[in-house]
Amino acid sequence: MSITKKIALTSTVRQADGTNKRMPTGVELSVTVYSVAEMQAHSPEAAQYVEDALEASIMANARNKGSQQNLPADIAALIATAERSGAALAVAREFIADFSKYLQTKSGKSAAVQALYTGMVKQRATIALSSEARRMGLAAQLEQFVMEATPEEATKYSNILTTLNDLCSGTVELDDNDL
Image (cartoon, rainbow, N blue to C red):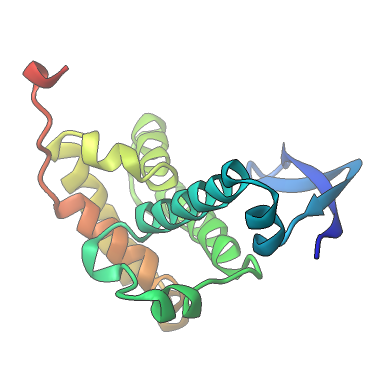
């Protein structure tokens, strides 16, 4: 049975302190959400749409996990780890803000290097494409960040830090001949 859900659109607004905050735009949408059964009953194309959306979701989850050992092993693990509360995104935003603040106040790095490391943390896929010097530099800053963090912060950010460290220590297998 389909249901209608309302969503309020937001946009990112830069705050006076330099951080970004999601703010409501004032636009609200009513979205019809169809059940899997309705999609399957509608047509083979609709059923394929559901299957494609599920595959895209699973692949996005895998990209966000960052390493093979962090991936769910079966369906039970996949649905057990699904978080719909936005808590994981909130922790990720908090980590980026805290790491950026650390870089500004304690790293001794130039603004350009701070921006580079913050960008690598925000867009994890860029880590794999970065030079070894950049990856090792980021890894060193992450290690120093952990040393400066409180035990509560280290625990809260442990999954993020583990993933980032794994990405930094991975090998790059990009050859110009592949382009």
